[in-house]
Length: 400
Image (cartoon, rainbow, N blue to C red; front, side, top):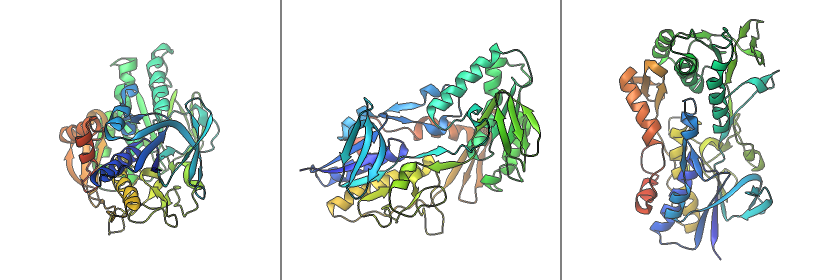
């Protein structure tokens, strides 16, 4: 009877886990283990691009790739993990209950933006999942049908972190594309921090500040949103901002499936894993991507909830889960090289290296790199068995 590696999730970490597991099994000419991916859709959704326009195009099909490398795809939504019984309960494509047993489990179910319990939060948009990003795009295109007003032409972005900055700096161009190039638009970032771009440290702050000034983006620092409604937001200090578009980008949390694995989790819900990405205290469960609290190097840095880390985490998790069944030595996850490429809209982009974010490229040079990352580097390989398996080597460095 075949053994089964079950991977829950088809995002960056799930995809690369599947390819890497298939690669190691292929290297050992081992056909007694199958690799199965369980996810709601056989596509990679290019989440790092959801702040852009034409978001409906930000997907890549995975079925041809999985078929080329011998990975079986099961369409379904995981609902319950039974660690003791080694199976996952899910709803299948017809919304019927079903079960998949496993010998080894790789949890790669990702994360979601954490919406707070604020009055009227349902009026806010986000760019976290493709359905919500499409909803935002439809809304922006429809703004031109509304009567001219300051609120119509205003976007409030709640959260001044990486996603908030990329979203805010893209908004002036997106608003003018909908309302006309001469439209008097306004974009306001609401941030709890005391400095612009505080979440990214001192390195890129001058560039973020310069881009914000050039693009006309306002920052309300030491501020937070108290409530949202269809016509704007009220801040914690009582100030009112009229805006037909409010985008929530603050806070993210690991998939709630992590709560079903008896193990320690961090404040973001991520499972504590060892250097091989095995969940500590669980012999048959590995975690990767946004659900893994994983040391990235020997200097005390931990992987972030980012595409950059998810790709390398996936390659390591897939290799090591297969190694655990083959009885061969694992390859410890290590990702000491860290870069940041922050899109700043029409201003350009800023590319940094290191955890202290040393500036390397700005404006047009940075934008060219960002375009390469977003349109080429983070996409899955072609449906060619040899090329795809070679690309899944966990020793390949990731710089996206």
